[in-house]
Every structure is written in C-alpha cells, then in structure tokens.
Image (cartoon, rainbow, N blue to C red; front, top):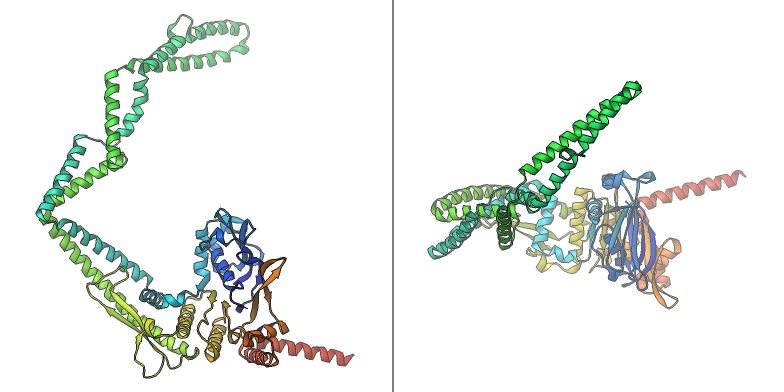
Length: 577
C-alpha cells in the first residue's frame, strides 16, 4: 500500500504531506484547490511524463516522495536495498531545465523502472477514462484483459504479421509488364555496379590494416635497418658488446666463483638480442616500397567510400544490399513461379490466422458472457439494478487485424424495456461513471491490484446513485487500498480516512493546504459539502451520514467495539477505587 506522499513545489502546492491508511481514503475540497494535482503527482512519481511548467513559481525543483510497502515488487529494487520493515521510499524530481531524476531508497533508477512498478502496484482511473469507455478499441482491450487471453493474442498478432508480410510481397510482384521492366532495368543497373566492384567480405578492414605500413614503407625500412645495425651488424653493436662483457665475466668468475650466475644471465640476454635482430632482419627484407601498390590500395578504398556514400550503408550493408537486389531481380525475372509460391504460403498463413481468430472469437464470447454476469451483479449495488449491458462480438471473416477479426461494441439499456444501443450513444455522464466503476471493480477482483486511484469517479451523479458508488468503493477497499478524489459528501462520509484540500492566502501568495480530518473538523467539512455553508440542518445531515457510514464500515465498527471496551474498563477501574 501507499503509506505516505510528500509533494513539494508542484503548481499551487508549496508543500503537502499525506499519511494514508489502509482501505478507503478520500480527498475533498473546492474545484481548483489542488486535489487532482495530488493524484497527478502520484502518476509522475510512478514513471509518468512530467513538465518543468509544473514547478511552482519562484522554486527551482519539483519533488515528489512516497513510502510504500514493498510487497511483491521488491525484485525491482536496486541491489535489493529494502528499508527496515519492508518499506520502500521512492523520490522523483524535475528541475527548471526539464531534467528528471528518480530514486528508490536513494539509489538512482530509470523512470521505466517506476513504470514497471506502477503496472503491478497501481491502477489509475482518471476523468478522461469516461471518454475512453465510449471507444470500441478500449472496450475490446478491457474484454481481453478480463478474459486473460494474452498468449492467444500474441499468437494472433504474430500470425497476422506473417500474413500481412506475404500479402505485401505479392502486391509488390503484381506489377504491370511496363512497371516490371522499368523496375528490372533499375535493379539490374544497381546490381551491375555492385558486381563490377568485386567486393569481398572483410576487404575494407584488411586494406585499412595494411595501409599504414605501405604508406610508411620507406621510413619503416630505414628505421628497421638502423635498429638492426645497432643490435648486430655494426662494429660496436649490442651483441658485440655483450660478447666482450661475457669474456670479462668469465675472467672474473675464475677469481670469484660467486659471479658465476652472471654468465647464465648474459647468455639469456644474448639469445633475446639475437632473436630481436633476426626479427628486424626479416621485417626489413619483406618490407617493400611499392608506390604503385599504394596508389592501387588508395584508389580501391576511395571506390569503396563512394559506394558507401551512394548507398548510405557501411561495407557490410553494401554486401547485404547486393544480395537483396539480386534476390529481387530473381523474383521479378521468375515472377510467375515466385507468385505461385507466395500465394501458397499466403493461403497457408491465412488459414492459420483464421483458425487463431476463430479460437480468439470463442474465448471472447465466453469471456463476454462471464463479464456480463459479473457486471449485472455490480450494477445492483450502483443504482443501476434495471440496467442491462451486453457485449456484441461480430467476427468479420477476411477482415483481419493484429487483434483478431472481431468488431466489439458494449450495448447498453438503462431502463427495462429499452432497446440495447451502443453505450457511446445512450449512456449519460452519471451512467458512464457507474459503468466504469463496475468494470474497474470486476477487473480489480480478477487482477488483485493493491492500490486503486479514482479521480472524480462521481462525475455527473448525486443522491442515491452517489451513495451507491460510495458503498461500492468501500466494498472494493476490503483487502486493498483506494484513493478517491470526490466532491460528494455521500461518498466522502464513507471513507475510513478523509483529507481536505483548500486554498489559503499567506504573505500575499495563494497556497494549497492539506488537512487530515477527524471529529468535528470532518463533520464541519461534510456539512459545508452538503449545504454550501455550515448550518444546524447541514450539521445534522452530516452527522447522520457519518452514523450510517459507521454502520457500513467494518473498520469503524471494530473501532467502536474497542472504544466501548476501553470505556467500560476505565469505568470498572474507577469503581474499584
């Protein structure tokens, strides 16, 4: 779960720190106070894109920090550096230049690592997802996620790509005779040019290795001859000096035997010098000064350079281009045979693609039936007890895509007797909010995402429908953590923890403040949310909402039991005294 969040210099927020609880957490406050900014901060922290324009005026750096339970994603941590109690501290910042940095337990990590963590830890439901729900592509993706057919989808995609590739190959060969001849002339010219160059594998590398010695052959030969003379051929050569030294050591060792080991050392030195001299002699004898060969080599390298520039490829790429052109010429010259072979391959690929699409269609139909039943049960708790949602799945044979051959549409009817129509055409804003919450609830139950974030899921609803949404969120929070931005007291009163976000003027600057509410403070905020200003009637209504919520909230009931027990215990102790 998300234990705490600290936001510094983000838009209207100078600094805010929130300590979340398990279960259901809500953020309330007037429009523009900064509630959604806090949720956006979580998104940035978990690998989302950021902008230097977010930085509060007058500040140099924006910082977001959070502490999480490590849970099942500790394998993402750099060098497994967990904090005591399996807590993970994540920090991300962005400076005025737009440079972003991320850290896990103060170890730098890439933003992609944070995104991987977010995929397994947090599910965001933002205000824009209401609009996504109306798009058939989003509906298809949701159904596929619920049906858990990821491997089958990969097979379909791979099969579609092979079929598409073969289809394009056939289209490229299906030219008119004039087009074919024109293309052949062009390809033959290019192929002729490359074949005339007689390029060989590794030729450029070999020439570049030989060039320095050939270009400097005269200087190398002179230096090698001089070095050979110093070592061996001159009267005062090193070897002649060593030979004289050997004679002197021999005389000395006859007088003082302790110098006898020097003879062996001199013998080794003489052998090494002789070997070096022989190597230099061979080197200079094989080294030829050949201006004609040098000119030929430079001309060849220049030819290779021109071809590389013309074709925009390196040496290996030119050789590959030659093979590719030769294959294309062969296909065009033998077009009929090539087309027949490709048509056979395409037919086989299409047959396999059709089989996989039919298999996927069947899996989607089963998944849709299961999803319809699950949603029907969820709708009853969302004030949509009479609504009906059906999933239309029509397979269009021959109309293949990377995602299969199905056209999928969510069909919706809000009232009994109403005909089913596409959800995008018939659902109101409030109905869309509740349908989306139902879908999120069903999917969350399947994938067990530990943290769910809802940004104004209550858009377009009120009254009993708002209460139904709140109760659904409360139930969904059993066994996981929910963070919800809401304007509705019917939902806020059900939360186990409520934060209130407000704007306050301080030293001539507007600042956002975040307070964790309890007791009379929470009662007052709820009263304002109900009536616009605190009145006896709004306070009474707020108190009633909290009492009703206390009866629905398991954690609140447990707290009541503890308080009653402790109060009874105190009274008994006082009586004994």
